[in-house]
Image (cartoon, rainbow, N blue to C red; front, top):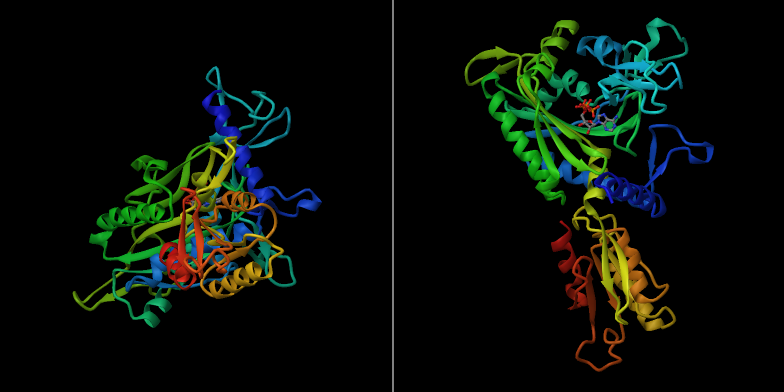
Length: 454
Ligand code: ATP
């Protein structure tokens, strides 16, 4: 099988698993969907929440120098005029005259040195023209020019325009950062590759303000921090690639940009950009609003517009990377010697949607069920657990393997003392990846699990 074919088959299996087990579904599916929009089901929502919570913990709660904010999606149109988005936030678009597809001009395949339509193969394409990616909307009851604004295409601008307020209330000194997680919208010409390129998505962004002379060093610092973050959520470094953007491809104001890329089945693609944006954004807003966005440095007695380093990550792309990195099919042999395929999502326990499955060995034994339910209630305040009493225990393990649950606890006859007192009050914990089991006293269960899922 060729590399391409096996990669696309793997991707198909991932998409199908996501739907079948309730990670990610097409938005408005019963009406035929809406291109570029996705809904997260029960397990996908947990996974996404775990990722965002861990980002917030690393970036805000565990640090002294970063505070959070939560800006509105709709903002004054002038924000987008000043930031340059209204004039230039566009992709080059061409139309195929043959099949009428609208295509990204910079993503066309080449045949015999000529660009062609990836849908029908025709070479009959229009000239490229700029297509603005912002969704336009009207605020208020009149749909005229004065009521126009946009759904934000990035979360960062809310941070820049609130820079002064947040600085004052937080009383931070440079270098310090403002972090935000929230929705962003881009009317992408070709949404594709599952959730990778969507029209509605979420971003996790940090704007880290500093003295001009520290920008270059802080760019390297944040690149390292962000790579470490991905390892800490279970994406190993061999699946990541750092692409240093050459000066001629960087935004004109940037003094250094890295893309952190992931080896997706459909190619090596950007997960996050880490950019040193100089004082461009704050200066633009200062000029356009007429309000000072300068910082007074008490140490040096100087006033200046801070420079900024921005790590900007996509939540949905990171969730997709987590799923792709975790997806695994293994051949194992059952107790009767029969080979079978086991599908496992090998999530890091801190990312796994369900942390622990709890299983009474038999569902028609009141004591087993009662004990299992008691364990569920005792663990629930501390983690996401799942109770399952139906089917053979092996089947129940497999169902949890497939959604990445790292631990399974079984309440058996030893637990309730029916095989003598030696193991009474203990349960087995089965670990997902090794499939090894250990017996642990019920009283130690919570700390055993909590130690491993944080
Ligand atoms: P691309 O080149 O892939 O369009 P970009 O360089 O325009 O991405 P940025 O503007 O740097 O992206 O946005 C920061 C992050 O937001 C990206 O690294 C990505 O994770 C996420 N992101 C951007 N556009 C989309 C999208 N259409 N769907 C999902 N996530 C996105």
